[in-house]
Length: 401
Figure (cartoon, rainbow, N blue to C red):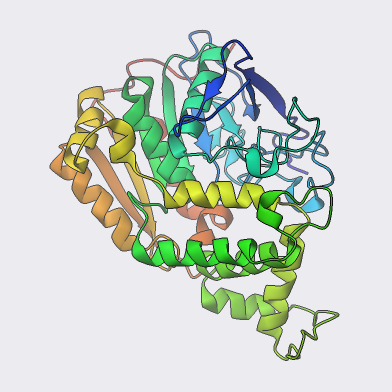
């Protein structure tokens, strides 16, 4: 359990109604949606100390502390997710210091940890939406979270932070709502979906779609497509963890029971390690939700969402709003390669946007941003405190009531 924050809880925000449905980017609509979120720290009197945090692909709203239970998840809230996924970074005296800031993290629309998604019950049928849940684009997620900020009375964020897929959403938020944020912190992310990423994601789509239990997404009254989801997770996992780290971890992995496939006998600890990761994942995640988030990643296009033709035009919005970007690269990242952050920084520089680019040297690969706070904290604190400016912050952020 976190010594800093202790036990935390998920809250729920409801948006829309039958009279005013939530309309998705593709034109489909639902008679209201739910957004699951958590808050750490307190808003100050003027509500100027809020930080919005976007989670990664299989993350949740539970970023810090210990949350023993989230209702209505049908067993998906396993021990693996009860400790906050960024607990090393959030809390009193940590990088996101809850004595100064109020950190907000929400589960994505289309997810499976309390926000409306394919596993949610359709009020018209009393059964899970399944295949009928609309495709979700990043602009749908960003818009739902902007509505959450409205609900909380937050007009302008001190910062928006996102890692991995969450970084795509952080950029989306900053360029769709430039007047609503000061500081933008994309961590190990990019500007677009590269060809290599597209191929890796498409392999995961095929893994799930070809599971005989998938049934086009309507599987909730029978067996779940666990084989397909496990395979999808194994495909993604090798991009999240550096191969050397996989080899090190695999030495500690006990050979998996039932390691005999139809013909092949699992015969190496790396194979056992990957099987373990896949089997563990299917207990805590929903295949339909996984597909919705992967689809969002594949369709990511901040230029389309902002109605502009170039990144120069996109980031002109950030220049006009006075944004400052802190961009993190990880030199051993196989998921979002450092070249992708370099492309982002070049676009920011062309648009004359204030920015700082930090390359983290790690042997842990993409997952470094989850595991090594000592490599990120000094830069996060420096930026959040406004020390990149010649003058002090325009507004104090530590007048917490």
